[in-house]
Image (cartoon, rainbow, N blue to C red; front, side, top):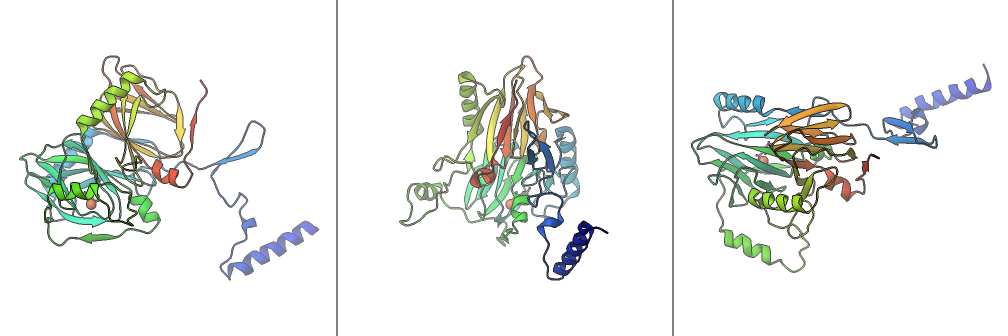
Length: 356
Ligand code: GTQ
Ligand code: FE2
């Protein structure tokens, strides 16, 4: 036994002793305590560590989803749960679509009301099948959800959903469930009544223009981003210039802060011209894309994900992606929902592009 072994024995004994005091020596992990899971060397042979990817790339197909929504309508009593939603669980995660965000397709039967509740979790919806008679009531105001409108229910706002048509209505939900649960900050309340008392739109408008002295609330009351405006904006951007990575792209923003629509979720719209081939990019943010029209392929690390209208695909954090429009005649259009606002707030957002 040499001196080194003796020292090791002493360290092992120390490890055991301190464990009884709920302590762990930093020296116990062979790797750095910062514990990123990908260890590499940079071009000067220095240690370079990166986070692992949470979850895997995956695409949920509209063909499957629409059939399951039909069955959910057939088999589920509306009072069974507050919402009839198909939550997309990432095949590589215990919960969530990404490690921060959860997306779901939600269906509401003709004449049905999904009762009023509120939660600290932030949520938004993208209309798929709907009309002016499909609406969410947010803090007493009815907000119509037509196809591809984006409707927000920021944290702790009362909301209930109505379908006053004779056909099932559906939309895509996106919520910051895994993020809020990881912080153990999930608060929830039922209103008790199915529906809220309505307030006049004018009251809300005047609230938007006036702010009590001393109030620091920077949040605007903008709740609805009509598709018509988004589409006009996309076409304008497409004429002005197309990004090498994201097609013609624009962010939906809060009209007062000019920041993301929700504190945790950014919404961007993308138009890929016919034959568009994006260059590789990777971001520390994770994202979920919903296809509005067209057909394409997103190459994520080594996986090729083909998508078409109303499919939803997930791009995990820190994976290389490049996006391709497979059609040589039709544009492809997508919404992308990302957790980038969380990362920006803490100075953690990173983006890398590949050399040509
Ligand atoms: O529509 O209020 O997919 O509260 C999950 C939780 C939708 C909603 C979901 C919800 C909602
Ligand atoms: Fe909700």
